[in-house]
Length: 132
Image (cartoon, rainbow, N blue to C red; front, side, top):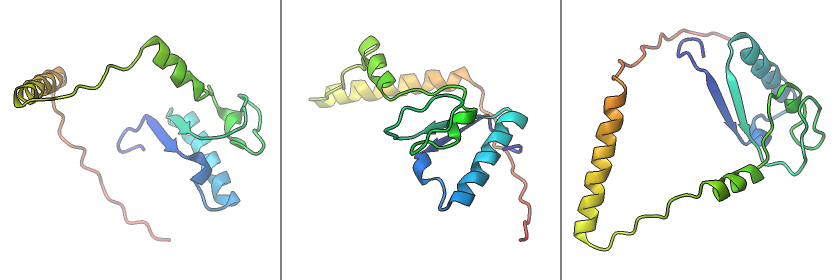
């Protein structure tokens, strides 16, 4: 986290994050530590049937995780956003001409994106030998 200057961590499937209660507790304390000391945002995607509340333990759901959450967003929010800003329809290509035009359009878009930010050299990570 420090060497690569990580600012956001995304965990998918909180229910499957650790094999035991002890490991999950250690993970909770570590997440709280990096959020407070290193200013890292933690986003967790979870499928729970409960209605978690910020600052309270969610029994049979997210457990202690909501106690240090800043926000909890329900899955229905994505449906509401789709109603406000619907996704564009997929492009269906019927001929070679349409395929060529779509490829040219994609290449043009990629070149515009590449011109927005200068390329940075890759980060050379230092490897450390860790002994248990």
